[in-house]
Length: 476
Image 1 (tube, rainbow, N blue to C red):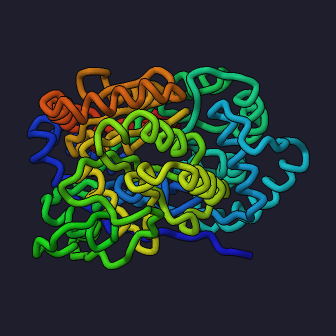
Image 2: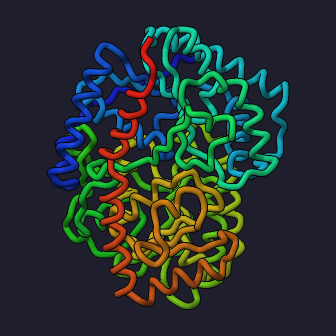
Image 3: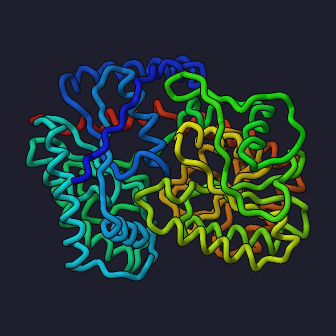
């Protein structure tokens, strides 16, 4: 039997947020942390998900749990294992919650059997980590089957769903029908948006908690343009003269790091020069992120009018174990790219970023977003979309779709541009062209974006909401 992975994180002192959030917010957070530490004395908060790398959930846990440990609360992190068949089922559920049929497969008795077998193996191992009175925070459909087994040990169980859709259809209802029997006894539910939750979850057990970013993580920490250029040059994402800077960054544990690995890049000719205009989308290779649509919209409506380059960057598909569609989506993008005219292929670049070192990967993304003239997230469906808050924090002009949690982060015309229909490639092209041509407007949106991220999407707000949730749980 494959063992559950326990992810070991070093605690971080949240006091380092104080200069950014200001004295009043910092003092309020200190009070909340003190009360939470007293309330949870002797109890653990065990977070459980399905991958330690790749995707917003894993990235968020890396930082939030480090801060929780930094205030003296025991908060371990366990990653369940699964078979390819199990992850095919959970990806089908994931797509369904986004109103998409995914691979079109069934969610019937045979799929329940696959799901239950993997769940039982993981539950047997998790029981060794949980004591009565502990809080177990389960993330997303992969963990729903663990609610009852963890309650049987005597734990309080909170199920956290990071995905969903404002509008429900048959695909959404089918996924909830699959999950409901596993979830109906959960002590609390946490969703990013109220509209994402099914009716049966909104019975007094529902909490709405948007995600957050860490401004000091390798993905968001300050980085000079010179270092960003060096990182992108050394990974093969940019060309240009060596400026003498070194591709260095600070790891989550405070130690120095250096970017050594190359990205796998599909392109015709050299990478963009350091002085050329650049549009970037960083996402998983997921159909709902619509990397293919970004490429096609750029090719039809931007390439011939701007001379800009597009980099679509996603993880090396072998580095994200819980997403079986990644390789398929990447192959679809490659096939479409090969059909573009030569002039377009010289300006559209598909990049698979190395995943062997999670901090190195984050530093590459940081450099790519900071160097971009525009960051886009043209999703067809979205849970929250941490790449949006990341772009806002870096003061990047942003173009996204008005779906899921994206409009919760961006007010159209104030701190970014939103298009109403992700399939409207002409509207996408017009928004990109506006920001490429009106640099003063783009810069103003970028400044507003940074302040929006500082105000609403940092970890003190996020952790305070969880502290309130845990305080509300009845004691046994």
